[in-house]
Length: 334
Ligand SMILES: [Fe+2]
Picture 1 (cartoon, rainbow, N blue to C red):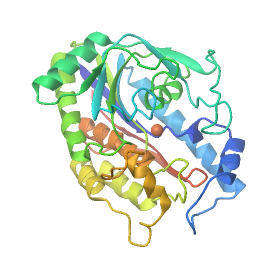
Picture 2 (cartoon, helix red, strand yellow; picture 1 turned 180 degrees about the vertical axis):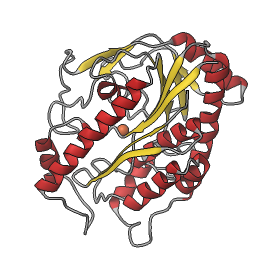
Picture 3 (cartoon, rainbow, N blue to C red; picture 1 turned 135 degrees about the vertical axis):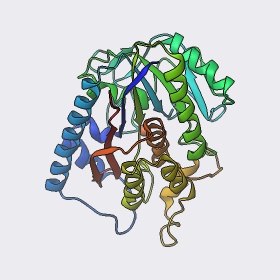
Picture 4 (cartoon, rainbow, N blue to C red; picture 1 turned 180 degrees about the horizontal axis):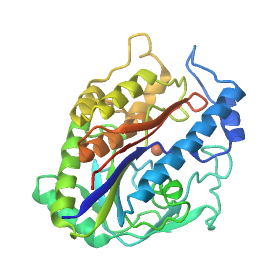
């Protein structure tokens, strides 16, 4: 059987990739809920360092596992799919793909034009279509019906940030580990429940171990989260949500992560905040945790694949975003 050599989960916020000055500038231009915590420049600088250290530790874990291929759970944020057609799950079964290494906007978040597609900003990642297709077939045999993608519909934007961004730090900028992308609708209601995500992730593990080539070393990455409502009005950082998720991660209980996630509701005194408008993703429908925080599904899927207690490298409440930035991994013995 193929070996799952490493399972990791990582935030992929722009705050991981942009300089400290950008943190402070972004902080100044955003809308925060009344009473939201404001870190001063010194605290931002300390947190910036912790973020960088977290990425280095995660890179070490990833590289020590010597993966031949990455299977990444990530979301598409208006990159390849739009609201006319947004699958709950999709497997990219096409050839090598390209995309922005990190933040694609030339200026502040949301501004155009995009950065030029030069090696400083733009990268290519090899795919493993034969593995992706075997995953697609086996998921369908098992009663899951993900959409498939033979290619990227929008090559100008490139593969989504959830898949591109983590690979830079993990490979020291080489982007040289092939990937099987599994796309999960985290942002656009109605999103799949976390319980359904767990069921699919467990099936993915079975398929990888039972049908992929025997000598293959597979790293699984859950990309996104934790709590954030990027750019939304009246944003705040729900540290309680993040810590409840991480406690269950450390206990090795993906089902408990999913049930907490699926049952989560804003506290009475917070539910009027405009940041929750983002939970629908613009569809006018609402179902469970959405916005950037919906990406926590990808962490829960990683936990379901690992199926053992995880280790949290660090959790950094980056109030400048605000975003709960986390780095975690699971030791896969042998
Ligand atoms: Fe994201």
